[in-house]
Length: 199
Image 1: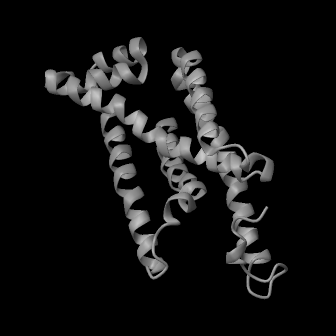
Image 2: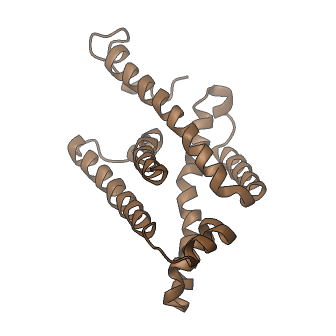
Image 3: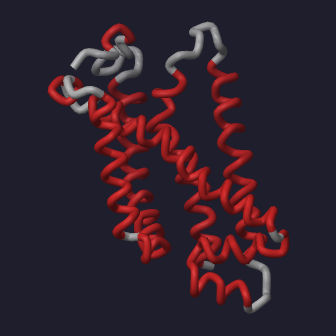
């Protein structure tokens, strides 16, 4: 039903969205590394943790205790996580703290990529130091998070739907670029690897 739909959507979007930032983090790999090896390592690095967490979430949906819906109603996702880890006592609270801190680690690559993406818009944008773009992105999502904290689940559900549309456009644009315009003998005659920083 709706939960399975969100499970599938999360799983697909988690993979596709990585494509927009993958070049930022794979560019320092030696050119001698096999593309197949890069694909396998990237795929497994995404597939294993994403699938584990999604399956764990699906398993937790089968719990029938009324305490869990009550925890979600009063505390949202955080309340539900706290209820799930409550049987473990102090260790559960420790895990909850680690989960809360992991949000910081999860946002670091996205914030860094926001600076790179802003600079890629053109030479005037590239003239502004990446640190300032990163700081602006941090300020924007911090304000959005503070303002929307009471409606996090609703905002997240709506945002996932928007991301689904964005991802579809992204896939079409990248596929056209690669298979039509940048193919050997295509309109643009392949990739010019020396023009990566040309605006």
